[in-house]
Structure formats: C-alpha cells, structure tokens
Length: 422
Image (cartoon, rainbow, N blue to C red):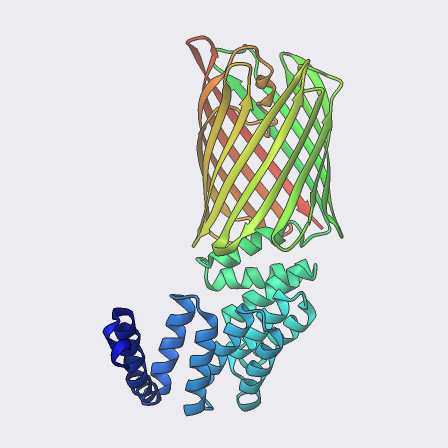
C-alpha cells in the first residue's frame, strides 16, 4: 500500500474511491428525504432542460413510490413514455390514472395524443369524446377533436368545432390555423365568380377587364378546381382554361398543382403550370416552396418561397418570387397581414410588396416584357362570409410601376368576388 500511495495516480484513485464511498450513501439518503413534489420538479427539469428522459422516468417512479395517487406525476410519466416511444408503457401508466379518476382531463388528453400520433385516429377520437362528457367546454379537448376529425376527412364537423372555438376565443391561433385548413374542405362543391378592373394613368390608354368563373369539387384526394378566365386587354379579347388541385400528402404536408392553356397568346400566356409543397408546422406556422412556369414565346421559370404565422387574431405571411435571368435574378417580395374579426372567411387584409406575381391573373401578363419591371404596390381587402355558405370579397391594389426605363406610371386594380358553397 505504501508504494501505491507514493504514486500520484494511486493517491488520486484512492481519494476518489474514498470520496464516492462516503458521498453515495449521503446522496442516497438525501434523495430519500426529498418529497414527491421535489422529485417531480427534478423530473421536469431532467426532461425539459436536460432532455434526459431515462433520468426523468426514474425520478417519477421514485416520486410515485412516495405518493402513488399523485395523478400529475403519473400523467407526466405517461407523457415521457410517449416522447420516448414506449407506447405500451404510456397506455398502462395513463390508464392507471383513469382507473382511479375517470374524469382526469390530462390523462385523457395524453391518451388521445398517443393514439393520434400512432395513426389510431378512431381511438383518439373516442378518448376526446369521453373527455368532453366530463369537460364539455374544454378548449384543448375540442381542438384535439377538430384535428382528429380533419384527419378522418370529417371536415364539416371539424369546421363546426373551430367556428365554436373562435367565437369563444377569437385569439386562439391554433384554432384559426386549423379553420383555414378545413374551410375549403367542409363543402363538397363551390362556385366562384370574380371580376377585376385595371386602370392605368399612363402606361395604357384603355383599362383592362378580367372575369373568372370556377368550380371546386372536394374529392378523397383533395380539392380539384376547374376555371375559365376571360380578359379584355389592349382592346382584344382572350380566354384561358385552368385547373388546380390540392392533393393531401400527410397530416403535415399537402401540395398545389396548376396547369393552364390559352390560344390567345399576349392576352394570356400560352401555357402555365405550377407546383408548391405546403407544410403545416407546429406553433401555428406554415411554409411553402415551389415553382411557377409561364410560356409566351419562350420559357419563364419562377421559384417561390413563403412563410406564414397565425398569432391571435392575425395572420402574417412573407412571400418571394425569384426569376433567374441571363445576367441577374428578378425578385418580387410581398408581406401580407390579415386581421380576423370572425370566422375563417371574415377578415381585413393589408399587403405591401415589390415586383409582379405570376399568380396575379390580372397582372402577370406584364412578365412578358423584355425589360425588367420595377414596381411597388399596396393592397387592401375585405372578406366576409354570410351564413358560412356565401362569401363576398373586395380588393383594391395601387401599383407604381416603371414600365419604361426611368418612366413610372400608376395602376389601380379593383377586384370583387363571390363564392357559393354547397
């Protein structure tokens, strides 16, 4: 031992072992003296701050040894099992709570989440309905039920719930985002009629007129829309045929497809097409990435990115269109906000931006120019639903545009529209 202790490494190991042997019983006794609440708080810190789920599970179990009927701890343990992908352990733990307290809302909500996230939407719905028997006004359970009904393609029922939630709490951003997802799906059919009047103070002598009619049908794969556009531009008439589709990919992703044709080139592009991938993200965020294609006498490819966020009564969206050229990239940016004063179709909107959007039917013809257009615009709009089945809207856009090098003119676009759902 004497030779061992003379070695610095030996002394270090000896003292380390001695310290551990003395400290471990003290730490063990200290943990035994902690209350179930102390252990619960330690478990929450381990889970949320340290992301150490095994440690949090162990602390929860120790806490339950002291307080077996502490439902909050058992519910939290069930949640940790869910996050750790231990579905069977989660079910067993949460059902133990319901055996003692059948009306425990947290346990019911956790089980609904567990089944929904494991693609058992019917079972998840059953838990929500069970919870609503005990807590009929629970906003969290109602919102979960609406999400599940949307996943089960029971859109009318989902829309009815989001309408109820928004009436009682107009600032519920999650309900607002879900209402936007379900509003187009809740009616099998929709007819739309739209008119745009475009006035120029300098660029053109005559105003433009654009009339569109469309029919939307909700299918098992998503919405499909057929549209006919008529325009009078440069004292010349033109017709364009379009179709849109919104295929659903998953709970998070859906897409947009567009194709169009016109024989009247110059009034409309001869061909147009588009694709976007949308993502419904946590915290009421949404994102989009895609492209648009226009063909007049040559190909024009335009790429788009957008990000949106629901916050209380508001929706904010930023979008850009990028058009690669021979020497540079033409850029268009738009920031839009909506203030919702009622349901999903009741809002005031305001937007500011630069450049021309290929999705703007009243103006995208001006992308068929040899020079790079520079413009600034501001848009205001009013949207209102009447008994949910009738929607009216009006928009006004003022554009200051460089239509020749260093030559600017103003353009005023007034649009009105009506939609009938059935």
